[in-house]
Image (cartoon, rainbow, N blue to C red; front, side, top):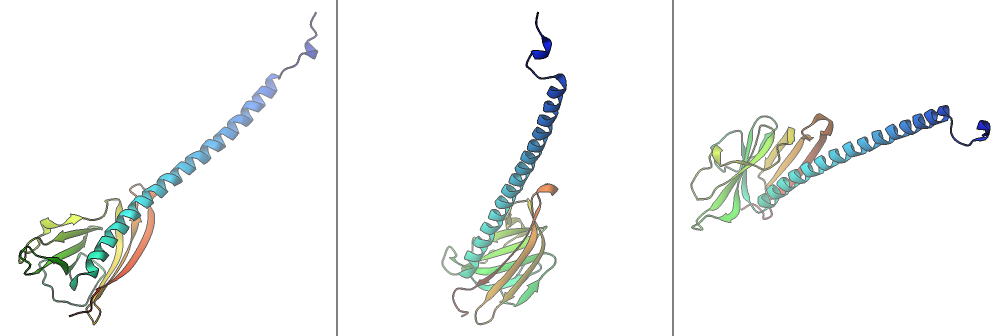
Length: 193
């Protein structure tokens, strides 16, 4: 005959308690993993957007450093009149003579940057004396970057320069949105002539 009180094993109560403890630990671990994955997605989204914006601003900066005759306006068409201006609302256009010669070498081509509908656009003149039209603009930054505030100032003094401040958010989904602000001052490499 077998003595049941001497058998080794777990009781039903012990099994239920251990399963409950395991379930609680597993839920906490899965919750932490989900939070880490969300933070990773947010950081990847931010990094991609900010890299895109940095590349666009760096491209603008590089071209403007070797350009001349900075002019800003609230509309097209515009002439390069070397004005000092400050824009902080609505659409703006920033034009300048690039360092690139036209096809015949008789003129310096014009580049225009435009801010409209929370994004930045660019247009390049391809021939001398051919004006740039609205259809020539193409976006420089990705659609998940939303610019909410900006300041653009041009100074055409002894050392012409442009000041640009941009504030906005990155990320399409609300839970991945991150606020940012960037500013740069671009000065003409060569003194004004």
